[in-house]
Length: 174
Image (cartoon, rainbow, N blue to C red; front, side, top):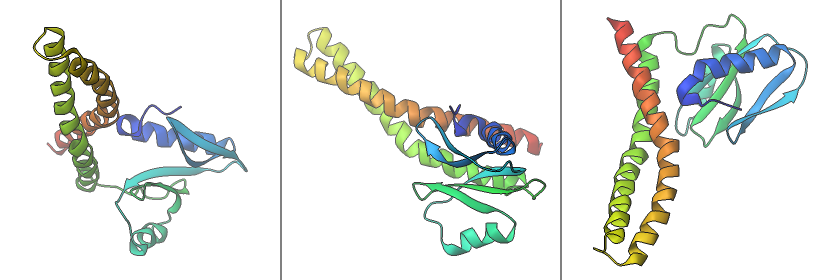
């Protein structure tokens, strides 16, 4: 089970490296976790990168630096592996900040409208319960607000996590 890449990316990548040392190699992501396959124990490290619709040059860059693609999710999230001691994909604060800023913006595009929609649906539901709107409007609004809350959790929480990571990196710059 994963605790969420937006919240603990480094911890999750270290956990995958520990599994690899025991012979359990990361293959792909599963809902709220990972798919591991049993193999020979390996002393490798994993790293995560976000790049929408990467081209061959993108993957060549990592390959030349000693990183091998393990899997991609949605053609925008990519996990790489490399031998222990390989220089990290992101070695400076500026490139790390750019990475998290891209993800923050991506989550923001869904989280903010979903938050507003959830708020409107809750107001409609309350208005219906107080007799200002027909009961059916309230029932539909309440049911719909549950769906938007789920979307909000999966976009709003990562959005907040990326905001936190960016603030933390900015403090390191000073």
